[in-house]
Amino acid sequence: MKIKCGFVAVVGKPNAGKSSLINAIIGEKVSIVSPKPQTTRNNILGIYNSAHSQIVFVDTPGINKTATGLDKFMQKSIKGAVSDVNVVVVVCDITKGVQRTELDLVEKYNKGKIPVVLVLSKIDLVKDEVVFKTLQDLSPIADKCEIVPLSSSKGKNVDTLIEVVEKFLPEVDEKDRYFDQDEYTDKPLNFLVAEIVREKALYYLDREIPHGIAVVTQRFEESENIIEIDVDIVCDKSSHKAIILGKQGSMLQKIGHDARVTIQKIVQKKVMLNIFVKVKPNWKNNLEFLDSLGYNINEL
Ligand SMILES: Nc1nc2c(ncn2[C@@H]2O[C@H](COP(=O)(O)OP(=O)(O)OP(=O)(O)O)[C@@H](O)[C@H]2O)c(=O)[nH]1
Ligand SMILES: [Mg+2]
Image (cartoon, rainbow, N blue to C red; front, top):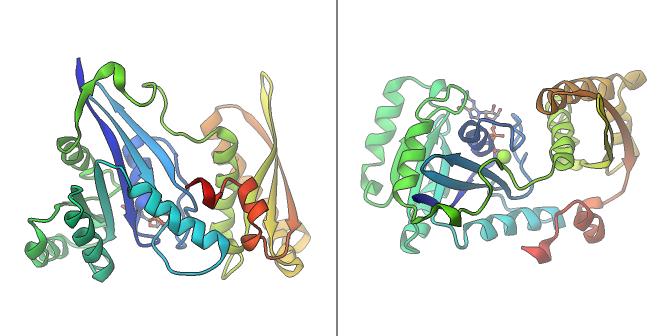
């Protein structure tokens, strides 16, 4: 039997709702989400499987121009994601409106003959009139892309996006699908665990601190009834370490508690989570350390 099968890059500004959209499509937590921009740091695959299709969505970091080794890795990841895909989905937060960045992306991929879908995200936050008006304003580019307004939080119109994307995908023999049908991401559980700790840290910490941390899983031991996990939160300065720990360890306790609850839901097992905070000055420019985190610019 033939199925529709292909790769779809999901790109857009930081905080546009890319990772939320991929989680809504897959129905599992594949990629972490936070109210702060620059949450996603590397390309993460979310694999959508249905009876008649397999669509591999590539979540990417938000488009941004800054200069540390990590930032360069993140921006190169986006370029890597859009080379060789069947479709590009450009996500635009409708509450911010469609701006130059999104229009330029549509133009660029349209010229490169890659089908483009412009997603207007977070429509649950605006009145219907705003959606109509935005669609009207986009009529000059309507021949260059498909436009899908949707809400990942409410699951509204997410199925429409899947239908639109499937139209552009090639038909292949079902035995030629890229991944087994029960796979839904390319990342191992210990990566997701570290990301969930980073998600909770992003939620609780302020200013530059959440963006100045990396989280690494050091130990992941599963026995019949329990999973024991050790993770390091690595930060730039000892003053940051003090804030991450909080008064008598209260901040770390909150991060650890929330992370454990989320991880337990995913693994369906009791979890013992130990978090250690370590200082590694200027780690964002330490290529060896970035490499150990999986942020290897040479592999893109
Ligand atoms: N109300 C509402 N909020 C949403 C929706 N989609 C995403 N959000 C919120 O928008 C914020 C950013 O979402 P993310 O999915 O992390 O955005 P992103 O584009 O992946 O961001 P980066 O990884 O930083 O580039 C989070 O607070 C989400 O909860 C939606 O459909 N409705
Ligand atoms: Mg993201």
